[in-house]
Image 1 (tube, rainbow, N blue to C red):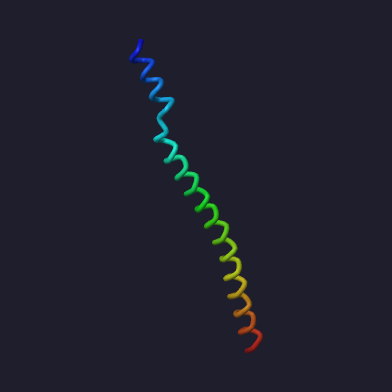
Image 2 (image 1 turned 120 degrees about the vertical axis):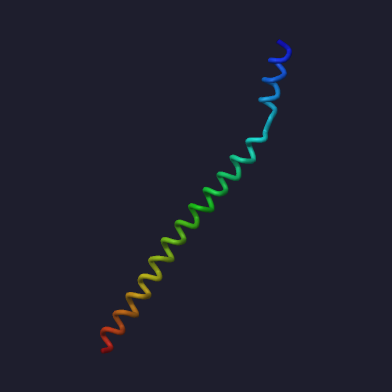
Length: 60
């Protein structure tokens, strides 16, 4: 009985998995930020190429 009590107590006190969860949350946040910024950047680049293409077409 004392062994079981010690095992349960060790599981309650152990915080080794907490770091892994924190790193996973930070990685997910960085990934989400990268995804949002890449979508915005893709739209900006697309608009720039369309503008250049339209200007070249109208200049001919």
